[in-house]
Length: 356
Image 1 (cartoon, rainbow, N blue to C red):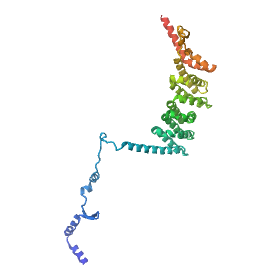
Image 2 (image 1 turned 180 degrees about the horizontal axis):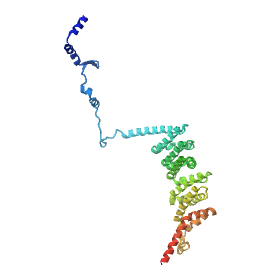
Image 3 (image 1 turned 60 degrees about the horizontal axis):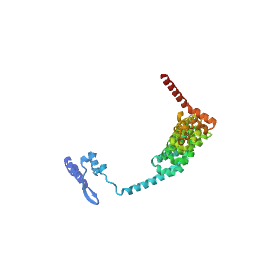
Image 4 (image 1 turned 180 degrees about the vertical axis):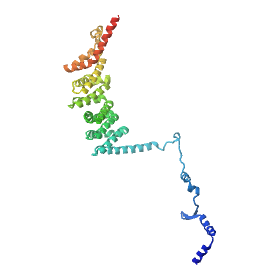
């Protein structure tokens, strides 16, 4: 039976064979969707050939773009912000613990990463790290002692950012940090010295001179002459920041004695810094204690209530507060500017008299 049917099919013309096959191609596919039989039409030729048609169908979801002025406030904004603040504090606290662990790591790369994180926290989250300074500063000092130059430089940069962020809050923790920065700025590789000097400059810029000068004065007597030289430079930068009133309150005699001790130091950096300080102090003293040069207005001719000890000269002041050798050295330094000025006055007076 089957063989007869196959024979009959083979005897048919080709056109009849094609006509019988065509309806089957046009017949829609039958499938099951959700358990029900449904006719699913074939995709159109345009959708099959053009992918943009499919993308258009996928992007049927509409997005509303709201202008800034049309935005509404979130519901219960205070509660949302409070939750965000709590989350931020928790994250920062966890991050701080991670940073402290990294600072104490034996891997120097991890230490550098932790130091950079301390810098980030000092700049962007300084309130959160304030209570951690007692743990962070000793670890930064430890990094300054690290034999790796990269760790030392990163620690110097960290110190500079800490000074600029915390100002006077760092004063109680300054002693060990100051000693290491003075040491690194004087005897290490050049790029480490430069970073340490920048940190010291940041310290003298952001820390109050009234609080900083008592920390610097012991360093002026250090056995290491290079440390004395760097301390003298910091001292010379801090004294002018006091101002006239600040110098009076701090005690000009204390500052003169400290500067005079550096005039005989073996390094020229110390001596030059001492000269700068003494000239500044001389200017302040002469403004606060004007000298009456007119004989008709001498202190003895003034009323008793106007007679004050302000007529004491700079020379007399130095001789009363310093030893003979120190006073002589101070007067020699401070007269470098004063002598040419007097000569100028003399030449001007002689020229005017000749014209008359």
